[in-house]
Structures are given as structure tokens and as C-alpha cells.
Length: 293
Image (cartoon, rainbow, N blue to C red; front, top):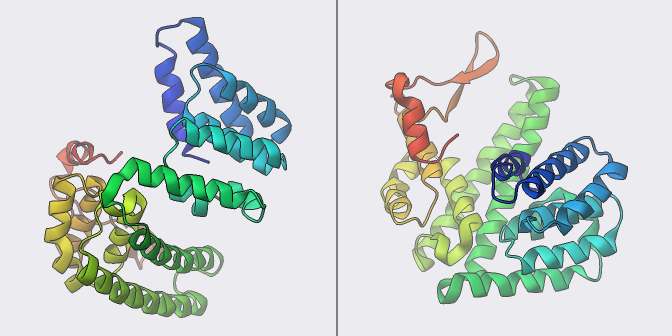
């Protein structure tokens, strides 16, 4: 499913959109459907998402969320039908759909799933044009999965055993090994294919490259910071991601961060806290300028 805050924001905008009562109906149904989904109440969520997806104002995201709800409720036929509709209406979070959305897990072993993947591949090629490199993107998404998997493990262990536990220490060592291997693979890809721009590998592929660099050593971050600045300036990577890297490089160099994106571990309290911020009075303006909330 997509970010629920996006749904609520859209609903809030449409309350005052042309169409009066219809716009208000859309907002009400969207809010009710989201609430039922959050509560995991499929008895309520299923009819609400059917209703929402049928409204004239329904977005591709609304239809995609209907597919997720049907999949979670065990209604696979409807889930696949809504996925087809979402793609036809322009849903474009392709990697989230095919690989990363746990809501669709029950569909991925179904005989109809390869048809959805094929449709996604065709949509990506049509959307991105001749620069799109499916193989490069696939390589980057493999790096993304390894990067995130080890971090999911360590997050669970921190919650269960605490930051200073032997269990966390063991996985931390593994995480550093994974990060080093990912950096080596990414650098080999960059050497032969160039920096992974959004127009070549999609936003998800560019995000994968950002994460590998963000989780690397300071020398590696500083090595790629100039090219990432150029990529962000030409809209080939996210400005908010560049801001995170800028902050991390500053923090690793013992300097105050600019955008307030980085936490540090306070050994006295045993809790994470914001690293120092330069000119904190104006941090919100800087965050807004790069698309951070």
C-alpha cells in the first residue's frame, strides 16, 4: 500500500475541489477506507475500497490500494483486476508493486503474477524511453534488497535486546560486510555503465544507489558527492536524498548538519537523538527547499 499520509493529503485537497458534494464524498470515502485498512478490518475495508475505486475522482493510487486490500482479504481475482486498472490509469511505483509491497505477497506465487510483471516492464519501457536500462536497474534493486534486509534484522534485534547487546553487535558486523560488498558491486557497475540516473534506472534504482553510498565509508561518500550533486541539479536523483548525504558527510567530519536528517546514538541515555544542526532557526526553510517534510 502507498503512504497513508499521501491519501489523506489528497483527500484534504479534494474537499475544496470543484464538484462540491462529490468531492466531499470522495474525501469521506477515502478517509474511511484508509481507517479500515489501518485497523486491518477487511470486512469494512473491502466494500469501502470498491466504492472508492468506482468514484470518478479515484486516482491510480486509490485503485492500487484497492488491489492491496483485496489481496490481504484473500480476494485474488479482484486484486489482479484492480492491479490491471491501476497500471492502466498510470500507477508508476513499479518496484514497490513488483517487489517491495508486502500487501501483495499472496499474489506473487499466483500464475497470473508474471503477466503483471510483464505489464510493468512494458510500462517502464514506454514511460522511460530509450535510455531505460532494465538490466542495470535489476542489478541495483538486488543491492537494495541486501541493503534493507540486514537493516530490518538489526532493527528488530535493537528493539528486542538493546543497542549494546551481543546480538546487535554480531549483526552490525554482518551489516558492515554487506555494505562493503554492495559498495564494491556498485562501483563496478558505475565504472562500466556510468552513474545510475533516474531516467536510466528509474527513481527506485537511483534510490538503491543512494542507499549504498549513504551506508558506505566517509571516503566513498566524499568521492561520489560531487556527481550526486550534479545528478540532483539535473533532476536525475532526489534532492532530499542528496540533502541526507550532505548531512551525513558533515556529521562524519564532526561538523553540524544542514537539514536535520541525521541521528546519533547517545550513550548516556541509550537513545538516538538529532545530531547538531547549523543555523537551526532556518532549518525548516532549508528542508522545504529540498522536499523534506
